[in-house]
Structures are given as C-alpha cells and as structure tokens.
Image (cartoon, rainbow over all chains, first blue to last red; front, top):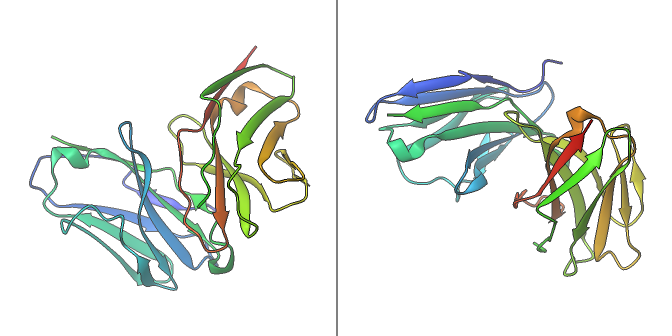
Length: 114
Length: 109
C-alpha cells in the first residue's frame, strides 16, 4: 500500500488566493483527519470524518476553511481566501473507524501564503 | 483526557537502548497510552499503544507501571534514524489525539 497520499507537497500562494489541499486515504480505512502544524501552536486537529461524514470540525479556524469527502477514499481541505497566518504544514491521516486512535499520516503539504 | 508529562529532550548512543519516560498520573481506567513519533519534515508515525499490560512490536516495547501512572517506551537498539520527537498520548477509545510538546530524542553515533 502506498500509504496516505497528499498533494501538493509544497504550495506557495499570495494572500487572497484560494488554496486546495488533497488527500487520498489508505485503502480500507474509513476515518480521515486533517491536522495543521506550526511552530507556535504545534500539531492541531482541524476536522475529522467517519464514513465520509464530518464528525467534529471544532478545530477549523474560521469560515475560510472548509473540508469535504466527495468519496470514501479522497478528501480536500480548502482555504478561501488564504492569509499569511495560514502558513503551516497540513497533514491528513487515515484510520479504521473502530481504531481511530491508530492513525497513519501522510507526508504533509507545506503551505506558504505571502 | 489525561495530561502527560515528558522530558523535553534526551540523548542516546547509537546501538544502545533508548528509554523514554512519560508520566500520566491522572489516567482513567478506560484510557490507553499511545506513542507516536515525528521525524524531521515527516508526518507523525504510530509506534505502539497499551492499556494495562506491557506491549512489544517490531518497533518498540511499552512498559506500563502497575498503577498505570507512568510508562516507558523502549527502543532496544537505537539507530540514527530514530532521532525524532516522541509523543506520549493518553486517550480513551474513539478519543481525539492531542499532541503535546513531546521528547526530542537525539541518537548520537
């Protein structure tokens, strides 16, 4: 298995632009998590899904952030409009729903908003 | 979820065992002890978890004290590739992972 796949690996954009991050789950997993990591705040959970349904989005910073799972194996995290303070590494992770504490993380997307 | 306390940093010589401690004195009976690590510029990696009994897998061993108030992650023969930040997380089933500051383990040649 290729593991969790994230794209792009690096993204540089200008303030105000829309950013879309993508994630492909490990085959057979049915829980999906989006995290953000910065030096100041560490690793934070933004939102997670079980069986394509958002369960907890309390970590989503504000309305500029949205996440979807259009199918069981794929998710997107969108930031519109982006701001410099959104610069961070964004990770997605997947797991089996019945063992969602055991998560497998992707390599991350490094986002820089100028 | 119970709070954990880990030393901010530790050193270990290559080939030696690395013993990483974690205190979780407020752990509840239904909470598990999970260990993850994050190698520089990579995503976190699951290592091992346990409830009461000691556990071992191909990566590490987890020793949990009888009162469950502390635990130790053991890397039996540390290599340079084990240099990473190690996170001890206490969490109930279906809980959310909360990553603290962890322990920066540096393995020296």
